[in-house]
Structures are given as C-alpha cells and as structure tokens.
Image 1: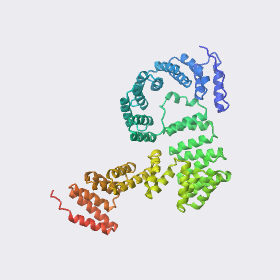
Image 2: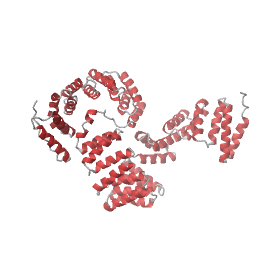
Image 3: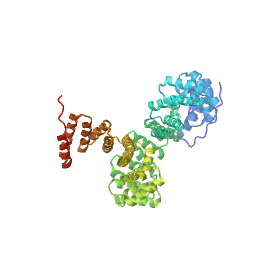
Image 4: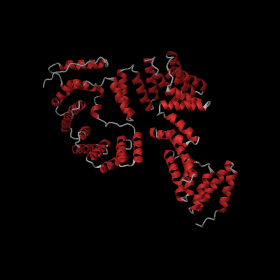
Length: 555
C-alpha cells in the first residue's frame, strides 16, 4: 500500500544525529523497493522524539502493513489518547489484544480508559487478565478496587485496598485511596495516618511498559531523556534512570542539568568516582556555572575529603566571586573544617549578595548557636518561615522547645516532621524525645492512659531509646500491670546494661510475678553493675533487696 510521507519536521533544536537519521531514512523510503523496516524506523524516530503529527500516518499505515505486530496499534492508541479521542484509542487497543491476547500493558491501558468513561464492568475483565499475566500486580489490584467503587461497593473496595497495602506497602496510590474511603466513613484520625503512609511510600509510579521502553534508542531529545530519567528517579529506581541519563549526556555533553542529574544517580548507586568525574567534566564544560562545583563540594564532603572540597569552592569563587550560593557552600565547607569564624563570614557574604537567602540564613543560624544562641535560633526560625519544609530547621526548633519543656510550642514542629520525614533517623529521635517528655508529664499528673499512649508512640519512632522502655515499665507497675511491664524492663536492661536501676526494676517485677530465682540473678547482676559504677547508694539498696528475698524453692 503506497504512503505519502509527511515532510520532515524542524529538528534544529535537537542533536544533529537525529536530523541525519531522519534524512537518511526518509531518502530510503522514496525508493520503490524501500523495506518495511525503514518505515518502522522513521515512525519510531518521529514518535520517540515527540513529533506525533508526523508519526501518526506512518503508525496507521504500519497497522495494516504489519498485521501481526501489536506494537503499532498500541502506539496508535497512545497517540489517539493524547488527542482525547478515547473511542479511537479503545479500538486500537482492541486490535492490539487480538494480536497479543495476553499482553499486560494493553489490558491495563484498555481497562484504565474504560474506567475513565464509566464502563467498570467492561474494565474488570482486563484487570483480571493482567493479574493472570502478572500475579499480585498492584496496578490491576488498584483498578479492581476502583471498579468496586464505581459499582458502589465500598466494602469490597476497602477489602481490596487493605490487602493491596499489605502486599505492596510502597504503593502510594493504594494508601491514598484507602485514606479517602476511611475518611468518608468518619475515621479522620486513621485517614490521616493512612495519608502519611502514602506520603512515606513516595510518588506514584507508572506501570512498567516494555513497548514504550523499546523506543528509548530512537530518542535523540536530551531533555525528553532527562525527564524519563527523572521519572525513574522519583520512582525510586536509579538503576533504570542511569542508561537514560547516560544517553542524554552523550547527546548533550555540555548540558549542566544533565551532568547534575547523572551525578545524582551515580551517587545514589554508590558509584562515587563516576559521580565525581561527571561533575568535573561538567565544570570543565561550563566553568561559569556554580551549580556543579557546589554539588562536587557536597560529594567530597560526604566522602570525607574536606580539603579537596575547600579547594574546589575556592577555585570557583575566584572565577565567580559574586555567587551567593558559592559563598554559602564555602561556609558549609569551612564549618566542616571547624573554621567557624570564617564560615560565619562566608554566610554573611552570601546574605549580603542575596538578602533573605534561606540556605545561608539557616546555615548562619546553626553556626551562631554555639556563640549566640538567641541570634542563632532567630535566624533558624526566620529561615523556616521562608522554607517551611526544611527538615533540619524543624529538628533544631523541635529539639530546642522539647528540651526546654515547652511541649506545646514544640508540637507544630513535631507534627510537621512526622508529616514530612517520618523515617529520617534524626526526625525519629526528636519525635521520640517529645513523646517521652509528654508521657513523663502525663505520668506526674496521674494521667495513666495518656502517659502509656505517649511512651508507646515514642517507641514506635525510636524503639532503642532506653528511657522510653523504663518509663513505660514504671507507669505499668504503678498501675499493677506487672506482666505488661516485664518486657519493657527486659528491653531496658538489654539497651542499658550498665544501668543498675534497670536491673532493680526488672528484678522487682519478676518478684511480683513469683519468679524469685530469676529475680535473684537479675538483682545480683545489678549489684555488680552498681559496684562497678561506684554507686554506693544503689549498691546498698540492691543488697537490702537481695537480703529480703525468700529462699528459692527446691527444684
């Protein structure tokens, strides 16, 4: 079947290699004996580089010319969907599935489109077909939950979502939809907790699609490749981002943004030498751009090479003396070297060049804390106003207010940290400390249930904090709940073996539970610990307790 080729598009903004490939393939197709593979080559070149108007007639022709290949109707469905022509997209997907009846990508895409136009009963079989190809697939499982909702069956939807979040805890869409259903049922507290789990799980990730991935070798648009790499990065898959960004850099070797992104991928993969070389190459290509020297200095600091980091920043400042970002990074490196006075001057210079720069303001505030705490915290607070989601500023302020016993003042910072970075180790420590203080305050006031809740919540953030276990055990003992107190004191002794008081508490609970032989051994270990620590008061107390213990029953 003859075809009229579209005129080649303007590719002047793209690498010259694409222009050559299009011209060569286009010339081949003007011959009468042109192979069908050349038409597929040109269609892929247009489609992969975003020239959809030129790609569409070629793809349509290939649907007929290659009647056994499911790719072309699949690509035609995508082109139709991008134009908003859902009926045409569905028809092309039907053709795809006639050629590849078990293809999971086509089943998912057709199901999503059918659900979008409120045809859930037709969508369901396609989700089930995908599950047959990919058992426990989260995208199909989510789709079936949405089908249940479209049918008005919220019970089935919740059951499917509960199972999905258990099987795939890193799938954010399931948590978010479940949170919506729980919220609609009136359980606001649980809905908020579920939304936090959704945030923890990260960004939604599109389902893998091998037919789209096949097109990457035909893509010569560095920006498009960088975006594809960024999507993989945001999905938590730096290994998949790597070939896309490496290809983008080969096509645009002077692009600072791509150097930056690729170095980030190498760093996440612990390929630090490759990250360093990528940044150094980028600096050589764009010596007047401060972003890459800053990233290189950060990398060198991470690797413990502080003097090299200082050299990089100093050399770059000689070329770009008016960059506030560079002066800020200069301060960071000087702080790491223990040269605090010079760091303060660097931060002040950054703020002189760019008044109100949050990074420099925060770093100056942190640097001043040792010499002028009030001024330091004022700057940290001001930086947080400008950047409300700065974790390090929130940690500093939450810790300050908690340590000072101003728990209500600390609470907004604690809540923000739990919302933004619940798995960050520093955040978990600060949040656990806040709950320890809150629980201790409640215990002193006799609010037992509130105290227990606070201590247990604290342990969910930092299960290795001995004070939380100790305080939890004490409150349980005061409530005569000895069996519940036992594991708290057992864990306390494991975490703080040199704390003789923990042995005293644990032994006391064992006595209450009529486990005298075990209690004796615990008291004796506590006695040895107190003696070693030189704590005469605790040593006498443990001797008295041991003297009052009844004799062990004969075995």
